[in-house]
Image 1 (cartoon, rainbow over the protein chains, first blue to last red):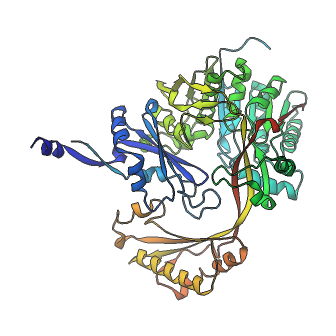
Image 2 (cartoon, one colour):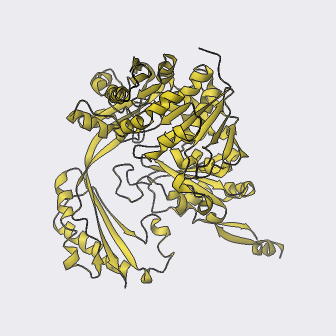
Image 3 (tube, helix red, strand yellow):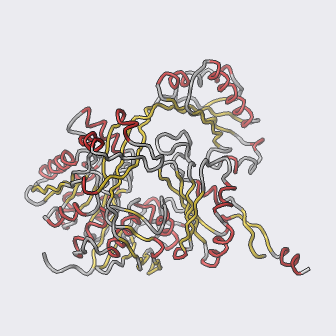
Length: 115
Length: 460
C-alpha cells in the first residue's frame, strides 16, 4: 500500500524542465555539461542521470562509452560522449559535426521526480 | 616597473576567426579597459594558414586581424590599452609587420611596441623529433605520427602564457603570437600586472579559468545561451565579456554599460562547461586547473564574481596539434515538399544509394540526414513530431573517401534526382556540391623541453 502510494507520487519529466546544458567537442568526443536550473534539482540529476542512462539514451547515436563527472560547486554534471561525431571536426559528415546541440538532445531524457 | 595595480581589466575582442568585426572596436571604445584579448585559432585553422603561407610566404596569419587593428590602433595608443592576440598563426612575424605598417600609416611611429611570439611551429623539426624517438602518438587512437608523416601539413605546439609575459615585460603594447593557448592570452596580462610567479598554481589556475570564461567571446555574455534565452536583452548590441581581476586571483566577469546581452551565474556556468573534459584536471601549458573548486556568485547586474579556484603544477608535456591530409568529402542536399515530404526524401535517399552502389564507388562513409526530422537529434527526434504533415524535409547526404574520384562522381548523382526521382523536389539552386579536401586534426603530446619559445620586441 505504502509503496504504491509513493509510486503514485512520482512523475516523469523531461530534463529540459530541470536543467539547461551546453555542449562542445574534442575530436570525436562530444561533451555535454548539464546544469541544474535550481540548486535543489542537482541531487536528482546526480542520482538519476547516470552514465549508463545517458548511454542508453544515445544508443545508436554514439559509438563509444559515456563518462560522467560531477561538479557540485556548479550544480552541474559533465558527460563525455565518445565516438559521437563521425570522426569529428573536419572529417565528420554530420550537420552537428562539432556536437554543438548534443546538449539539447540530452534534455529530451525523462527522469522520475517526486510528485 | 611601478607597484602592482589593485585590479586590471581584460576584454574579449574575438572568440574565433570569423567572430563579430564590431566587437574589438566596441570593447576599446565602450568603457575603460587595460587589455584587449583576441583569440583567432581553432584546431584546424593552423593547417589552413600553413597552406596559405606555402603559396605566399608573406601570408599564413589571420588577415582580418590587420584591418581590425587598423581601426582601433589610434584608440589603443591614446588610452594605453594593450593587446594579446594569437592572430599570428603560422607567420606571426609577417602579421606583426602588417600591423606595424598600419601603425606607421596612422602616424603612430615611435608610440607602439610590438611583441612577436614564435617557437610553436614544429613542422621543420618534425623528422628530427621523430628520429629522436618522439612518436607524437595520437591521443585518441594511440597511433604513432609516422603512420601519416607524409601527409602532415602543419605541426604546432601549444605555448602557454610564459612567452607572452616576457613580451609584455619587455614593453610590448601589442603581442602577436602563433599557437599560444586561448587561455594563455588572458593569463599572461594577469601574471605580468600582478607579478604572479610561474609556480603560483592557484593563481595561474584562476587566470586560466578567467581565460576560459572569455575565450569564446559573447558565449559568456548571453550569446548561444540556452537558459531563459528569450529574455536575454538586446543581443543585436551584445557586450562582449570583460574580466576584472584582482591580484589575489579572484575576478569578476562583466561587460560595458549600455550594451546588450546578459551576464549571470547560469550563463557563465554554461561557458565553463563548454568543451570540458575531466573538470578536476583542465590541463594547459601553464598549470592544471580544478574546475570543481570554482565558486560563482551574482555580484550585481551583469556581474558574476569568481573565486576559490585551485590549481596543480603544470605537466612536463605540451600538446601538439598536427594537421594532416585525410581525404575528400562532399555533401549534397535537396528539399522535398508536402505531402509526404519525409517519405519522398527517404525514397530519394534509397534511390541515390542504389545508384552509388551500382557504380561500384567505394566510400569510407555515406551519411544521410533528413533535416527537419532527425539531423540534430537522430532517432531521439523521429516520432517526436507527426512527420506526415511536415511541410518540407531537406535530404542531406554526405560521402567521404580517401581519393577524389568517387566523391566527384557522387556530386553528379544529386541533380539527376530532380527529374528522375520522387516528386515535389526543389532547393537545388546552389548547383552541384563541390568535393572538399579534408584536413584532419591529430592531437599529440611532446616533451616540454624540446619546445623553445622565442620572443622578439620591436618598436614601430
